[in-house]
View (cartoon, rainbow, N blue to C red):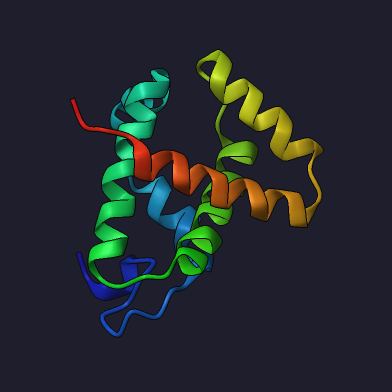
Length: 116
């Protein structure tokens, strides 16, 4: 995959505007597998957070991307379990500031997820 397909370029600069395109490239069956089970979703996030940490991204940079991902999911994906429904309802009810705070909390949740 070429560099223009990534949310983070080789210099570590983030391009949050590319989040939707990056998510849409995930095969629908894989996206469904990830989103169907909340523990699977947290595990997926955990791997992505670890990868972002390994390239030196700050929590704030990750939160900006997490916020874009959550915006995309709230607009384009139907919740597949009660946890996702709650997150979507909180997201839609929140202000921009509250959504950003929720993005930070989701990062911390993903960081604490242990892999089975």
